[in-house]
Every structure is written in C-alpha cells, then in structure tokens.
Amino acid sequence: MVIVLLTFALLAYKTLQPKTSISGSTVDAVTDTSTATNSPSTDFNDIPPTYVDSDPSTASAPIAEPVLSTKPAAPSFTCDVRQHCSQMTSCAEATYFSNNCPNTKMDGNHDGVPCEQQWCN
Image (tube, rainbow, N blue to C red; front, side, top):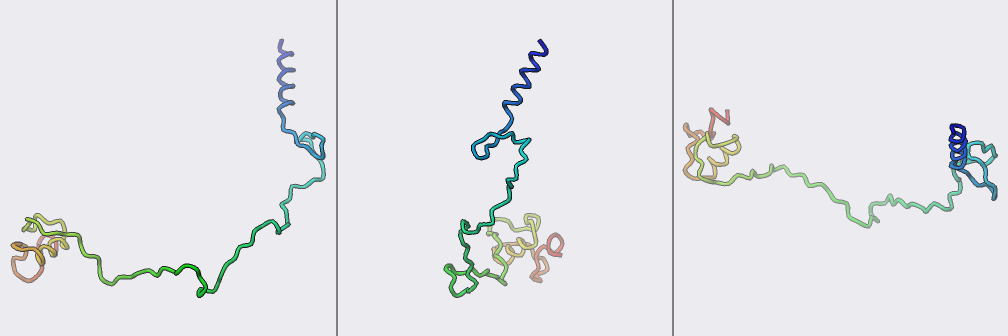
C-alpha cells in the first residue's frame, strides 16, 4: 500500500514539473542545458523616444512661481463676549481682543501690552 502511494506521488510530482518548449520539443526546465541565453534585448528600435525640451521659452505650460508673503497670516480670532485674561488662550488672542474688541479689561497699566502676568510676559 505504501509503495503504491509513493509511486503515485512520484508520478504526480513529475507531471506537475514546469516544462519549457524549445523548437517544438518539450524539455524539462530543471535539466535544460541548451545554449539559449536569457539576456535582455539590445535592440532599441522598439523603445519609443523620450523628448526633453531644455529651452524654457518653448515650454507648453507656465511654471508656477512660489508666492512668499512677508506679512504673517491674520489670526482667525473674532470678537465675542470675553473681556478678561483668564478667558484667553494665548498672547496673540489677548492682543487681538485688546486692539480690536470693545470693553476688554486686559491691559491694567495701559501700556499696550495685555495680560502681562499670564500670557504676554
């Protein structure tokens, strides 16, 4: 019984091995010692040409120039009912509120710098 199973396994193994075909005959891929090489083709006629235009005056699309701003982006603060330093979260926010919003109580010594003990020290 064991011999029959081993014979069947060996037969199945041999039939499932990859085969290659050279000029119509089937050859075992493992034992192939032919002189055929698998080197890449050096025929460049089948490669499409690639063109690079080094003259910028003939470019088809304009080149985007980066925009550098020397002015910082405006903070996204808006006036609301807050009036005291304890209600602020940063010096920038306190300064915005002090300069732009009515009835703030954040600059006790009236020197133009709000919340000096908490945020703007």
